Amino acid sequence: MQSTYISAVRYVCGERRDIRELPETAVTDLTHLVDDIGYFCQSDQDVWSMAADAAGCTLATAAGRPDLVVYVTENDPEPVRTLPRILDRLGLQEAAHLVVSGQECGNLPLALQVAQDALSAGRSGAVLLVLADAALGRSRVMANGLSVFSDAAAACLVTHEPVPDTPAFALDAIHTRTCVRLDTHAADEGVMSTVMLAADTVTELCDSTGTEPDCFTHVVLPNYRPAARTFLTGAMRLPPARLLPGPTNPMGHAFSSDVLITLQERMVTGHIKAGDRVLAAVAGPYSWSCLSLACR
Image (cartoon, rainbow, N blue to C red):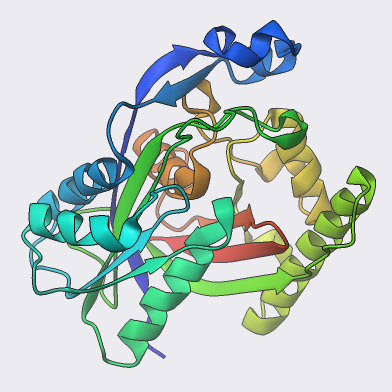
């Protein structure tokens, strides 16, 4: 099978705000989030408009035009109506398009699988992947105080050849484990289920690719509090020293865009270099997904 590359990652986010401005501080002690995260991003833009801005930045870095656009969102209230507006703003009125959702903050692996399948089947030559979400009136404080939600969008091109003159990641493998647990009420049972999914997903990914966990230079997780990221890295049976933090301060947790934003930021800062292998992991409500990536 031909290689799949993720290139031209770009993102936009809202204005930086102090966590102490959140209304929850009046009734809940958020000291741990103030200390660990510090800030979140809030935007006055519609979700689709943020998506179009991020996608425009991606297209500005690459020659050629995508023939498939995959819009990934959980919080856009009318994605079927807004996706055509994104296409119109980008000048992609003739591009095939679809919406991916259903995994809350864990939609990236599913969207990449859709893009990879379209390329492998010959139905597309280049896929524009656009992820965008915003809090839209919901509480910005995540369950269990993991992080705070930020309004942001990220975009990239998914192709069989890397985009020239821009950093790229080869997508070597995607692996997901799912365990729906509607009858789980106790928080500790949910945590244990997540730990088991995380461990099993890494094991099966390595088995399917003939690699070992030690081959990964870095581990990238969503922008949770440092203690949570360290715990989840251990759950995957990987050394915490390989955890490469994302920009929690001033970003917070940018829904499904988190991993792409971290990859782009850490390439810019030089923490990820050509030849590095990255294990990126995200969680859905009842799933755990891992991506095996190689920086080119």
